[in-house]
Length: 216
Image (cartoon, rainbow, N blue to C red):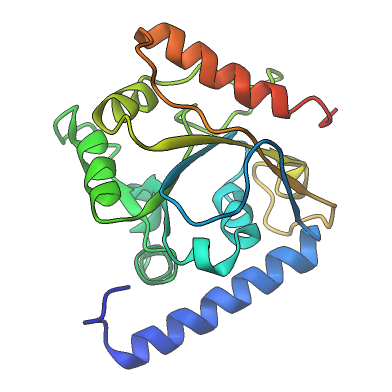
């Protein structure tokens, strides 16, 4: 939210944010594990596996507040603008970077939007698989957007984040979540270091897969 957001909107957004965090913690008892990285201030792109609509909520919920206040999830505008409630949550609770997935925008637009958010001082949560993984594979191939964003902003750390168990809490098609313990594991930061596109995508994907070893 910006300083120009009306006071009642800010109050409602804070209330919803607290309610969403409490609900997520009650259902999942989610905990964070930091491996090779610390929860300290600094601009980052958190990139994670994607198996549920609630994925970014768990990442957001386990971040310390000093980090959470600066992080913005990257999400589909078609989903978050579908209803007034979703629009309010997406815009005012999570301050999401809303991406047009209809194909009507220029191909470069999503990367430009994310780069602009980084230039404004935000950190990001993104899902480089590009869609929810409903297959038996641990991780789908990464889309090229992760590479293009790293190329546009090579000074930014890309932190892999493995979300464990949330696909079992919120299976596709289910409305009522199943209470299960979840863990969010943060790994060592990655940066573009002269890699070619495929090499960078393989390296960042492998870094994320490495975090998934305990999620069997």
